Amino acid sequence: MRINKCLVLIIGLIGLMTSMLSGCGESDRYTDDGKLVIQYWEKWTGFEYDAMKAVVDKYNESQDKVFVEMLPVSQLDSKLLLATAGGNPPDVSGLWSYLVKTFSEKGALTPLDKAMAKRGISTDDYIPVLIDLCQHRGFTWGLPATPATIALHWNKKLFRESGLDPNMAPQSLEELDAMSDALTIVRIEREGKDVEVRFTDLTDTEKEAKNFDLVRVGHLPHVPGWFNTMWVYWFDGDLLEGDRKILADSPENLAALAWYRSYTEKLGVKNVQQFAAGFGNFASPQDAFLSGKVAMVIQGVWMHNFIEKYAPSMEWAAAPFPSVNPKKTPFVTIAECDTLVVPKGAKHPEEAFDFIAFVQKQENMELLCMGQKKFSPLKKVSDDFVSSHPNPYIQTFIDGAWSKDAKTVPKSPIWKEYTSEMGVGYEQVLSLRKTPEDAAKSVQERIQRKLDGMVRRWDAVKTERLEQWANDDTF
Image (cartoon, rainbow, N blue to C red):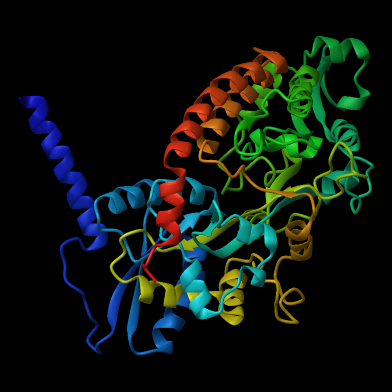
């Protein structure tokens, strides 16, 4: 009986929370001057929130029918699913693009294709890899907000001190590894005294013994760790074949895992763990790269903002992160974007899409993207967008989005589980607790089994679901 009471209480609290966020049970609200109020949930905070707020304010001032009420929401993904399931979602929501597949298959989103056609918005208006992130099973479920690609960032001062050309990025993965060795400094006892020397100046015996402390490292593939499970892209491989075959144990994935492992094999597991324990949070001066402890890092277009804030005196540059075969794949990157979606069951979908369409206009999109110091997902940009952009390397990230080797997270609802399992595998390989083969085999078997079950369930409802989406009459 006590358990039942607790369950009722929890359900009640959840209902209260979603009601508070979504305005459950309320009739339409209007501003004093008669505008219909629609709710917009967004995950952003800080300057990113401020950038979108400027667009929201502009929209609210541009017409006399709708007022967008923008609310910052933590843990937005879980709350949005909960609110949608409860029939009380917001009218508009921000959403990470990698969740579009999962949310659409869960019936939490409204297909936007008909609304786009009415407004004359075409998928051809966007950089292909970015609009592709918003689509699934032939339908468009969201439209891009701010996009991102990733690239190598390096500390030019540390390059110079190590005898490297500060204006020249490594051109291949092999060259990156060699430059990392030249940039790495260790503290070691020699003749009874602690001395600091470059890793390249260690004797073969000292390298084998690994009896040293790391003072600075050129590169660590698990820093910052956000893209670990996708290193295979730099080895000319992939994570899925079609939508039904896992490629965790492919030769390319095994090569990526072996490269990942090579850093702890070379520097020592304990040494790397002790060194990494001294890193602070990413958004702080103690971050591994911002503090100068790691000289090269793979990071996104957003990194410029954090350099400006936490390490404004840093001399830095950005360029394509080199691949194992630069002649074949000269600019591998991962593209992603924030999206704007209309949750299924939203009370005011037409007004919601009117706001989304407003954001998609070139001048408004540039206002948003410039405010967040990112680039526009639209093909057309103003003549001075790049020249006036505060990020001196913004063109590098734009080039990445247009690269033939631009990759995204796999377009599969299994991705969340897949990347979680791959993450465990990468950690086991980095700590030398498993070989690449053993780690990959485990992921392959577990995720393929789960994917097979997911595919069977999809096949059972495929015809009905596609027909339902095609006949959706929301717009």
